[in-house]
Image (cartoon, rainbow, N blue to C red; front, side):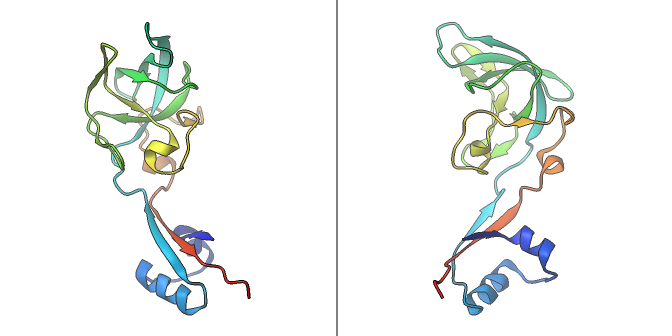
Length: 164
């Protein structure tokens, strides 16, 4: 079973460190098999509005998108099947950081410059699978930082549940 440190903090009033909580859980009879840090390596991710989408000639999956990041209109190459005009989505601009990718830089894909990346929950490390970029509520303003949209920093404890 997996349980969130943040969720436990909302249910129980305690001031234990992650290591102390793991020890207390183990001593209570729930062996901690693993501890996973969520949100590490994420920096500068924002909401952006997709202004337009055009298929890239010679590619089956790629689209050339114009996105508004709250300040600027940027060109982004996107391979997500669900990208569409007027959607609000998560965006990694140049200089932002992702856990598996590192620092974002400008890229050239199919002879098109891309000034960032539209994101799925998988690229953020929030999920093990992806069926496209993460669409946000239309009320989220472009330029809003990810940490102002959702609290993504958490520690997940994996507990062994005994049959007794």
